Image (cartoon, rainbow, N blue to C red; front, side, top):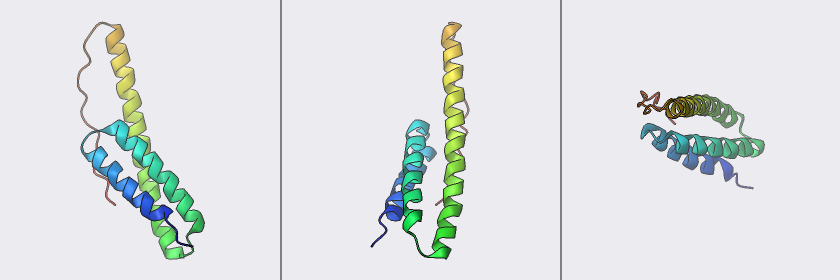
Length: 102
């Protein structure tokens, strides 16, 4: 049985990295989550121990980046809400983007 989850995960995480690097953080977060689901399903069927270890290492990095993005988005949303309640315009926040490599 061919494990099609890993190639799909790689395709999805590549799109996540592209969105992340272009500053589309909500899309990047969604794609990182989707790719993590594919990776986890793929790991269930992966028999090669070396490949499993490599995938797990990559998954750890993608999971950390997804958590950073989630926090960044929540902080931005909280800042925007408090700015709109006070009647002020929300300012732009510096990008917390860091390049994540495959």
